[in-house]
Length: 332
Image (cartoon, rainbow, N blue to C red; front, side):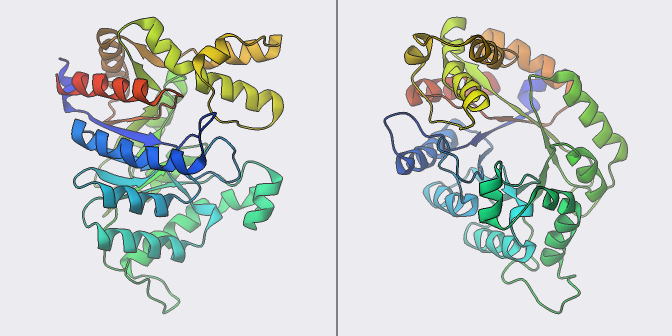
């Protein structure tokens, strides 16, 4: 096994994707069960996401779901990938993570993103607009200040103040520079655009300022990884998400994941077909040997310390099998 793979950490972001014929509550319970299996397999972290008003995603309240995951596990780190800070007051976010860290000490991560709602209706419901994302860096400073007790308001964030909850910046857009200036670990994707990813990582490392949170740069690369007995089986794991993305870009809604066999039987328009085929390319997918080779290349090119897997598919047993195979790669 490659020494690069052996030294890297492997973690998972599960978006609690809904599936055709299944409910949103089922999707949330699937995430909790997945965390238990990932813990048994030796994965480092399980993160959950924040999406609002999306038919195909059940994960809308990441700190609540993180609490359920942490309560159902014992050793795996649990966090968010991420809490979208422009949607919330930094004090409230600090309080929520302070509660999580108090209940599950030493296991909680605070992954933070700068996106706001995807549609005008969602942004209006949240009381936000697109411009709020531009305040992310200031919001991040305020949030970290609540943990350090440096807020100038005289208010203290209880129980967050004095606790250490590792923060991570999701490097979307300007995120690499923000993470570097703040001296925080950075999560960057996706694996489909390696050149852009490498530029972001170089920018981050070149401008990194050591901080109490991170004395040196820490890079997490994220993306879809599918491992199966054959390349065709691995590719079929990608089919439901590729179609859902194509559908969202042609119909304006992000639907629940369909079974691969239903997608393969569809008659698509030329635009749908192009987007769908594009959605199947660029990921790390194949047999154990093929995936190990590709992972070694990625880790060599990026120098990343951690890989965050973001795979979603309809067949949960096939997904678990993929993670079992990936764990075997990681452990040699």
